[in-house]
Image 1 (cartoon, rainbow over the protein chains, first blue to last red):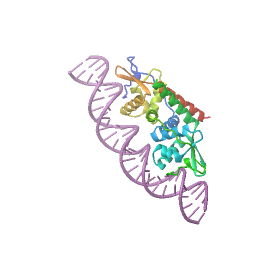
Image 2: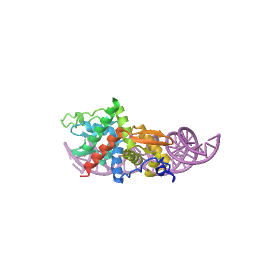
Image 3: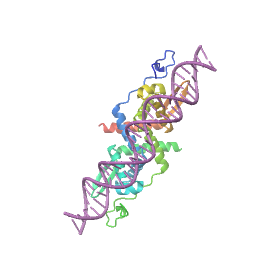
Image 4: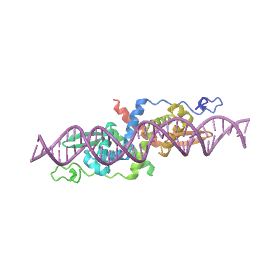
Length: 118
Length: 118
DNA sequence: TGCTAATATTAGCAGCTGCTAATATAGCGC
DNA sequence: GCGCTATATTAGCAGCTGCTAATATTAGCA
């Protein structure tokens, strides 16, 4: 606020304690994860990849997601650089699989959403 | 890709199985959560609120976050509508606290980041 | 080698997002 | 009621994001 922050108000109406610092690299790491998943196309792609037992190929994600091939590739590239999917080549095909990080986060999302449904 | 998707390639080189459908409201719910947290200011605000035992007031979040009062208010409003913080009034002051949903997600983020640090 | 198929990358566009400044609203004491 | 403080809301701007279309790259085959 100005210089009259209630934190040090002498009337005993001090507002509350000093806030903590959040480490910059923690912020960057977590925000990269969260924002990578925080988009419809990328979230759906991740869900689809997560539900496959042996990886999903770009060629079938595209019809499922209903966007262009380029958009699918960009989505997967973003998920990969955030550490949410791994990829491998098999001839012409590229397969994507979820990482343990993604599994954990998706499970947590399912838990908290399930709790709301009661 | 076009109509010759490897999914049904008769040569046995079928690419993989059919992808699942992801429920639209599940997508909307989760993406709202993730994108609310997927921004530096809002993530840091949530972290600060999470570290306080009895709620944090807007007036101290503002200096901690280093943005305008209006930006703090907007950030908290977004977190609130995503169900990540609850709020209460005490006279002139507005206090924000984390919800169990936020706690779960932040804990999971800490877990997966901790795993990476090894 | 030349072609097709799969997919990554790039360029560009329209809409979105996050911020500031200004304003509106709520609470408090005189 | 007035003036102040705390904070929510609004308007507007600059930069960002997600998409398509086009192109580049890679793999496979005759």
